[in-house]
Length: 483
Image 1: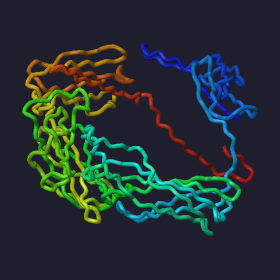
Image 2: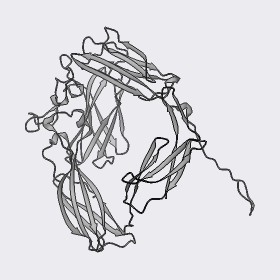
Image 3: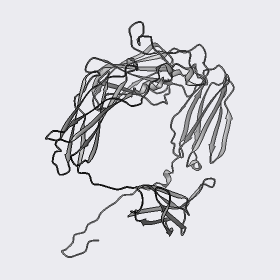
Image 4: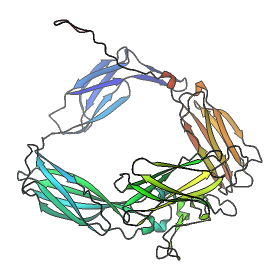
């Protein structure tokens, strides 16, 4: 039996009116995988605008994705109708508890167990191991150089066959080979996915899968901060050190803050990332001094790619293996890069990188040589609060056109002052803005268009109810009814 329920509503966006529809006739058609009608029901919505009914899954035609179509209410949903055969056993892959390094032989265990609890002995096991590249999160800040195009497609590295033992267990061994086409300095890790298909003596096949993550290091570090950073408050960095399986681990190291070397003047935006090689490597994947750190490119519009300049702060850190650590530091307005360095348990170097832009919301000059910068404090604002954003340009002159749109209408539009290259956008959120509004900025310079559209949510928090359940039990005598 296929049971369904629907609700019919009227939507009037321009009038900002949304309501349920009572006593509405609705025809619900049940269609098979070839979209041929099986049967239909004539229904009517109740006082709450809802309708419901049921169909019987057909047994006289092919299985697959079938459709329920509410013709009078312009709604539909899909469901799958399939044959079902109860499995007799299950397959489980158990990733190893011990960590491995690239180049090691990895041993992954599995077990096939009947649902009666008995082990599946002498069953045929067909397996394959597939490798997928995983780059650290900070790599994608500077992605774009086609010379170092990285494919994250799966690559099968081995396959084979084995059998389960008297205890139903089997073992799969493979060598954790890295993809040598990917620079080691990018700190890639590799997911080795193990797939096993087990077939019993009756010909039934069940599958299981597991994954082992191996990298050049046994640990990864994460460095984060909110994009909205003002000079009147300390920058709060979030520091995490994790195993490659995502478990918190203790570590100690240092976080160094570099001021970025800016170009002499803003570099206009590239027409395509194809023309921008965001990171550079020496031919032997190391710089001439032997360091494996990445080099920045100065002549680019993206400030996050600029090279590291002088050190402005340095702080040690120690993680406790539990929650993310918080480190605060005071920075003047400008463009920075935070570089975290630590070592894993094998002594291998681990790093994390985070670009940081700090601005003064009261300043009328931006001061950073990027063609445009735009940041939003919060994209969800309650009625009665204020929406804030900052716009800036590194050009000596530049005016931005700001538009505020609500309910398909431009409710405010203006040019910034001629001498300003930084502009603080503040929108008092009125009660009638519930449902949301949009903030659009438009800036043109050196034959390049820079535009930002931010959809701001203003939730219907005034319509939210708090619901709780309470139970009252009186003392009862035997035989009495409880209310």
